[in-house]
Length: 403
Image (cartoon, rainbow, N blue to C red):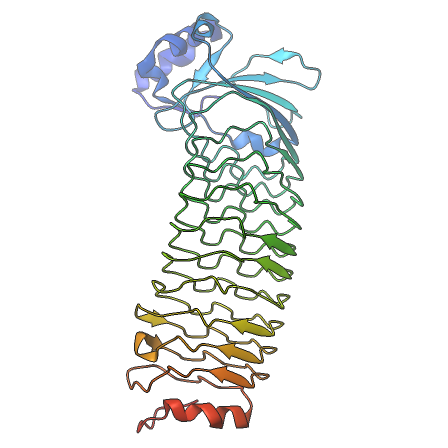
């Protein structure tokens, strides 16, 4: 599967003129030439079912003319053997797009550290099963199955992720997957989980109770647009090092239950749009959250139209914070306790309670008048009596104030 040989014109002509056997020998023994050969996985887009065996290459195999080593990732090498449906081995450089390949054995060079983009945009694949994965030194699985939007069955129980650092976008866009068994997925050394399940719109339930997140720094958009997800338990996660939780559950419109008990957020700086448009969410316990370092809470609960009660008494603002549209559209919310928030640390309060039409009780006892705050449309859409009661806390001699 030679996509390009980045060498001189003469070298390409000589290389292409060789028969397959001699070509294999050159590739196997000429390291410089290996580094000039690239692989494209574009043909994978036509496969419907794939079984994969990943094993460490045996150095002795380099003497076998039937094996073809080619470059797939920068500074790394892969070795492929293709199988057809009858398990008859086919040693070829190219697999035609019309073939219904069901099994692929991938034997990888010992220097391989990354499986990044391995099946990116393979939109026709319906099943992937790893039957052996004898590697412990893979560190990058970013976008590994990204946009496999026909994938309905995925078996990754054999995958070894002991040393994987990057799992960003790993399953992003797998819109047909209803379940993903990640019970054997180890994240002890993982730092990046952002966008991991983004746009997994058919995912109904997922168990991440075995996830070890002690080293994770980014959870941004991890479950965003998982529109079929109904419940999730995060109570066993350690987010001590996490800095970004923005848009984590954005547009999870079917989400009814999120267990965040025991979750602390000591080092989080971004929570903007964290639960935006979680329209089915009625109750939420985030009493353990510590928000001392958060700089952005804008749109955090925006569109949570079924949310009835919210205790934010532990929320504090030690940093200069944006809280615009924080509760915008929370039409069922009747009570909000913001007693520990101080407005001298909040520079934007615009539309914070916009369209909170059921709001009858609001504890903002520590809010202070501050002419530098943006309070535009702060109580727009709230009841007349409620607005009149609380807007006096923010009235200045400023003709531009508009609640």
